[in-house]
Length: 332
Ligand code: ATP
Ligand code: MG
Image 1 (cartoon, rainbow, N blue to C red):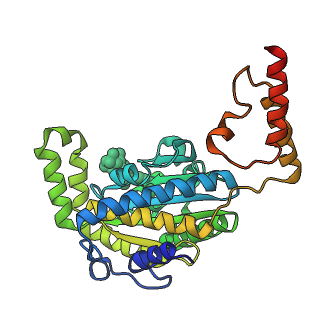
Image 2 (image 1 turned 180 degrees about the horizontal axis):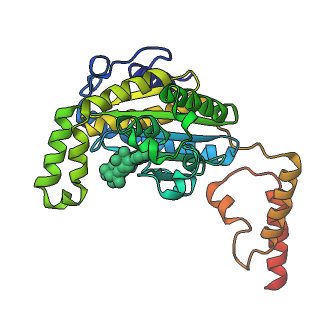
C-alpha cells in the first residue's frame, strides 16, 4: 500500500462498521465528527479526492472486468444529492450511472423486492450509484410495515422474521455480486435531528430552496426514533467483510463529501484497475496503422505531428518519416 492509500485507509477507519459489531447510532457515531479538520482544509482534500476518482474510474473502465456499486442512504435532508454532485464532479459521465429509488411503482411491486435494484446494477467497468437503495426495504418498509402488504408477499413469506430474513438475503446478494467482480460500497450519511430541523427550516425560509421542501419529510421526521433503531439494526446486521458499512458524519456537508470520496477512492485503489496490456499482435497492428497514416501526410506536414510535438521515442518512426518525405517530394 502506498502512502496515499494508507492515509485514506486511516482516515476512513473510524467510519467503518466492524462486521459483527452491534451499532447504537446515537452513542457510537457522532454526526458532527470532523477528524480535526477545518472547512478550508476540506476544499483542497475534496479536489484531490475528485482527481483521484477520475483517474481510477478511467482505469476501471479500461480494465473492464470489475464494477462498483455505491449505495447512499440517509434521512431526508441528509445531503445525498449534493454528495453525489460533488464527489462525482470529475468523472466521465459515460462511466457512471445514478439511480434514485422512490416509492415503488405497481410494476415494481409485482416483482420480488430486489428486482428493481438488480436492473440498475453496474456493468463491468462502470460505477453505479444508488441514491437510496435496496436498504429502503429494511428501513422505510420496516418503519411503515404497511408497505409490506403493498408488496403482496404470500402469507408464508410474511410469517417468520421477515427482517432477519431480508438481512440475510441482502448479505447473500452482495456476496454474490462481490464474488463476481462487483464491489458494493455502502455509505450512510448520519445526520443529527437538530441539523435536519435546521435544514428543513432553511428550505422554508429561502425561496430558492422552497422547491426542495416537502411536508411529507416533516411527517417522516416524527418517526425519528423508529428510523434510528431501524438504521442501527441494519448497520449491525449487514456490515459484512465483503461489503462493510461506513457511517459518514453528515452535519457538515463539506466533511461528508470528503469522507464519501475517500471511501470510494479506497475501494478503487483496492481494486487497482490496470490499463490492458497490448499484445504483440495488437502492437504490430499499431505499427502498421502508423505507417499507413504517416504515408498520408500532406505536403509540408510532419509525418506524425503528435510525435514531433511530444518528442517521444516511438520505434519505426524514422522509417515512416523517410517514406513520408519521399512521397511529399514525389507530389511537389
Ligand atoms: P429528494 O427529496 O432529495 O428529491 P428523495 O430520495 O427523498 O430525494 P423523494 O421522492 O422525496 O426522494 O422520496 C422518496 C421516498 O420513497 C422516500 O420517502 C423513501 O422512503 C420512499 N421509498 C424508497 N424506497 C421505498 C420502498 N421500497 N418502499 C416504500 N417507500 C420507498
Ligand atoms: Mg425527499
